[in-house]
Amino acid sequence: MARILVAEDEDSVRAFVARALAAAGHDVTTVADGGAALEAIAADSYDLLLTDIVMPVMDGIALALKVSAEVPDLKILLMSGYAAERQRAHNLDALIADVVVKPFTLREITAAVDAALNDK
Image 1 (cartoon, rainbow, N blue to C red):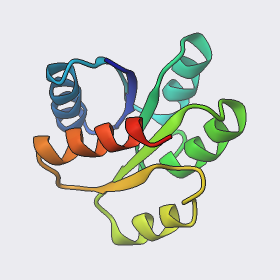
Image 2 (cartoon, rainbow, N blue to C red):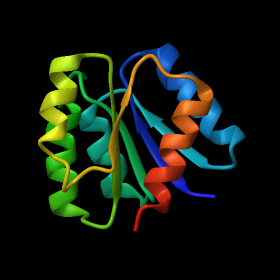
Image 3 (cartoon, rainbow, N blue to C red):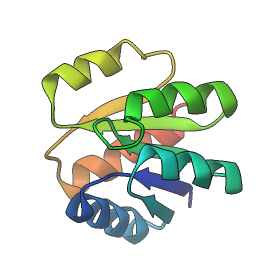
Image 4 (cartoon, helix red, strand yellow):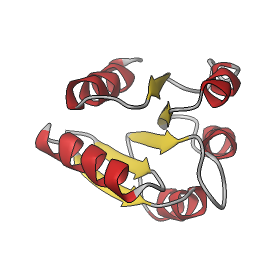
């Protein structure tokens, strides 16, 4: 079981991901934007940050850059449905585990999370 922070501004996607990861045995905390994610990371420890790229307050790429500098051991997995944003994220290969393409299935998101958590 891993402690996972999910940052996603779309309620339905956030709920779907949280249910999928909880059903897979993980302890999941959810937030609706990058600013709230930073607050959660400052207040508690997590094994993985799963964040959307396009969000209000702070986007997922800015969040990944800040978190990787402040908590270098925290694994980061990004999600996006926008091709241009996925390309921006691939410039962060050294900092992130992967980019999950939306829309995704329950099996795809849990497999991506498992792969990110098992990546040493």
